[in-house]
Image (cartoon, rainbow, N blue to C red):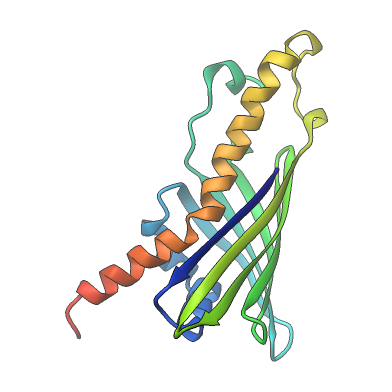
Length: 175
């Protein structure tokens, strides 16, 4: 499955990019499909490269028919990201139980704002799930649905979350 999303933010890339790279937890209240985010590591590897590893947990409903075939961590994944400061972009790889994702986000300066582009390729590995052969054709589509509902909104709602965050910042009185 391939996901692509593009949106425009009325904030400069110099403001948006470091917020997402370094202060992502500030956006959690604006990302309704995310239950939790934990930064596992942060490493500046050069003047223009930062490697960050985060652990995400999504909010998603698991259909009862699929629940007994899924581990509790199906809604969690580890995010390995390499941020490229000279290009305002990030390449990432997500690893979850029975699936992985490869993608890239770019934060391009445009007309004083930022053009945010998110791309991702989700690969689901059916062999990882312990589904009896005779049930596979009826249960596996439910498993795919759970994975897609956990991953896709978390990738494509970043712009919406940023807009909510900045709207709240504008409403707060100056300190």
